[in-house]
Amino acid sequence: MPLSMEVKTMNLVRFVVAISLAVLHSACAAPSLPLATMPGSNATAAQHNSEGIAHYNMGHWSVARDHFASAIEAEPTLGESHFNLALALDKLDLHSEATTHFKKAAELAPGNRAITQSSAYRSHTTSPSSIYEPSGNGGMGGY
Image 1 (spheres, rainbow, N blue to C red):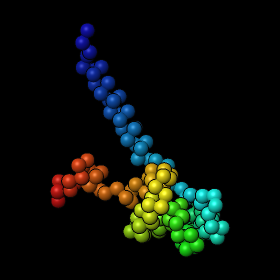
Image 2 (cartoon, helix red, strand yellow; image 1 turned 90 degrees about the horizontal axis):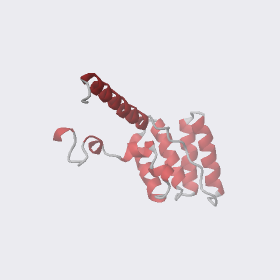
Image 3 (tube, rainbow, N blue to C red; image 1 turned 60 degrees about the vertical axis):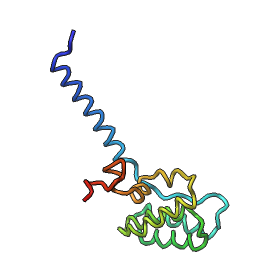
Image 4 (cartoon, rainbow, N blue to C red; image 1 turned 45 degrees about the vertical axis):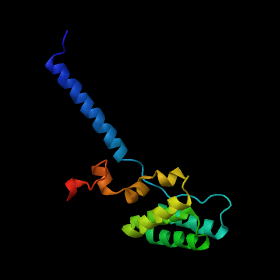
């Protein structure tokens, strides 16, 4: 027996709602949080990184930035501290600088999925055209 128009419409509505919820869920991913340094890191760097995380969690973005920068000064190869600095810079609306440190964090710790899969990293390193156009051929109609 063929489905009535009413049943077809309800199935379509259910499908659209399910897709909308899936998109909404992915768009509302948990915020990126600062990362602890790896065991064996320089003690001074680890201390500044920990203090930076504490201030970041209190919303003291500038103080957190300064601690993360000091951690990097003590041990420039800490991908986690570059990531954390990028998060603080992002909160301070210093997006160009944040992007630089997100990229450096991924370069220094390419296997750290907490960095490379974070929403903050992806939002700073994904080109807008790739969001609108899968081929990346200019996006937005080539304007």
